[in-house]
Structure formats: C-alpha cells, structure tokens
Length: 167
Image (cartoon, rainbow, N blue to C red; front, side, top):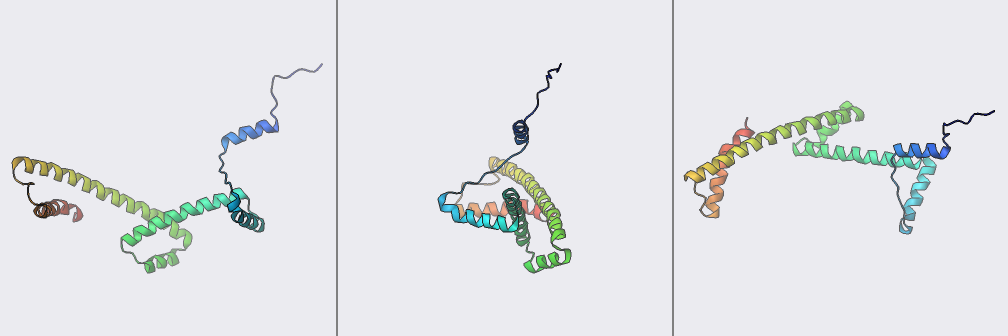
C-alpha cells in the first residue's frame, strides 16, 4: 500500500516563480521607428556571442563608471590639474590602478570639500549672528544705497570669512 505524502512537490513553474521573486529585470521595447537600432544590437550580439542581459549590464556598468570618471575629471580640472599630468598618472599607474587611485582621491577631495563647507557654514552662521547684533545695536546701518551696502557687506565678509580660507 502506498502512503500519500503531505509534502507538495514543486513543479518547474513553481521553481521559476520562486527564482523570479529573487531577481530583478529591465525590459526594453523597440518601436517600429527604432527597429534599425534593434537590428544593429541583435547583429552585434550574434557576432559577439553575448546575451542581451550581459550586454545591457555591461552598458549600465560602463555608463556609471564613465560618469564617475567624468565627475572626478571635473574635480581635477577645477583644481587646475592639467590633462597632461592626468595622462602621465594614467601611464605611470596603468588603467586599473589609475581607477583605484581616482576613487581614493575622489573620496579625499569630497572629504576636504565637506570639511571646508562645514567650516564655512559655522563661520557664516557666526557672521549672521554678529550682523544681527551690529544692526540691532546701531553699529552698522543697512539703510544705505545699494552700492554702499554692497561695499560694506563685501568688507565685512572678507574680514570675517577670509579666516576660513587661510586657516
């Protein structure tokens, strides 16, 4: 006599549903106007042997890596590092080590900027409190012409805020 089991056997469809809950997907729809792009992609996938999924993942990762490199390159340009020196650094370190260096340096730059802005914010709050006190006590008159007001504010800002940039 056969015993009936209370254990439910999972079908292939059940396993697929369970797996699908753990994964995420992105779909791309091509309209009739986009078919030439679709055909070009499919031709490339066939010749390269890549799957659609791996190709899309590669594109996304390349996009974000390029985006990060562009942001970091902008930091370098803003800090007046010439392209010649950047290329020299790439040549010395090689591409992979250069990317590692750039990640480390970007963190350092962002940290330095955060500290500078924090210091600036603290000093600016102090400046606002002092301005309020000076206006209330009559030590400064803000009921003056726009040109004179601009000159007074610039002088007060440079005297107070300049200490951040030189500390």
